[in-house]
Length: 282
Ligand SMILES: NC(=O)c1ccc[n+]([C@@H]2O[C@H](COP(=O)([O-])OP(=O)(O)OC[C@H]3O[C@@H](n4cnc5c(N)ncnc54)[C@H](OP(=O)(O)O)[C@@H]3O)[C@@H](O)[C@H]2O)c1
Image (cartoon, rainbow, N blue to C red; front, side):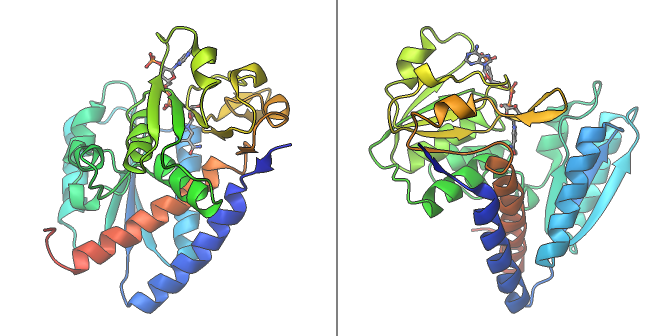
C-alpha cells in the first residue's frame, strides 16, 4: 500500500514557516489578484488565495472587472499594478473570459511581479535551468516530493499532459532536478507502456481516473494534479483506490497538490517582495 504524500500537512508546515519568515523580514509583501468575469470557480480560487495571504501576513487586494472588459482595459489595470510600489506580486486568475487575449494579459505582467510564473520571460529562465518564478502547481509538487524524501536524480519521470501552466513547467523542473523526462499527450501512442516504465508519473490530463493501476509500475511515485468535478465530488486524474495498491507513494485528491499550489503562491509572493526590496534584478 502506497505512502500518502500529504500535501495538506506539508503545506501547513510551510505556511507556518513562511509566516515566521515574513514577520521577521520587516517587509510588507502584497499580492494583487485580477479577476475578470463572474465564473464561480475562479471567484472561489481567488478567495482562497486571499485567505492564504491573511494567514501568512501578506497583504492583498483584488481587482474585479466585468466579463465584457476589453483586453486593453485588463492590460491597463495590470500595468497600473506593475507601477505600484506597494504591490509585490500580481496574479491574473485564469482562464480569462472568451474575447480577452490571454497571452497579451500574461505578457503585460511585469516579470518581476509574475508570481504565477507564466510570463514567457520566467518560462525562459525555468527552461534554461535558472528559474526565477516557476508556476506554483509544478513548483509545489517539487517541494512536496523533496519534503517527502522522494529522490529524482537519475530517475525516469513521465509527465502526462503538456499544458503551458502545468505539464511543460513540470517537465522543466524535473529536468532541472536531473530526472530523465518523457512528456506524453493526446497523440502519444501506447501511453501505458511508457508510464509503466516510470519511477515517477505526474498526471495533468483533466480526465477523471484516467491513470489506472495497470499503467503504473510496482513501487512508482504517482502525483495527481487533476481536479475534476464528478457528481459534486472532486476527483483526480488517477484511479486512486486501485493505484495506491501498486504505487510506492501517491498524492490524494483533495489534499495533495492543491494545498501545495497555494502555499507556493505565498512563497513566490514573498520571494517577489524580497527581490523588489533588493532593487532591480541582476
Ligand atoms: N491542483 C491544482 O492546483 C491544479 C492546477 C492546475 C491544473 N489543475 C488540474 O490539472 C488538470 C490538467 O490541467 P491543464 O491545465 O494542464 O489541462 P489542459 O490544458 O486541458 O491539458 C491537458 C493535457 O492532457 C493531455 N491529454 C488529453 N487527453 C489525453 C490522453 N488521452 N492521453 C494523454 N494525454 C492527454 C492534453 O494533450 P494535448 O496537448 O495533445 O491536447 C494536454 O496536454 C486539470 O484537471 C486541472 O483542473 C490542478
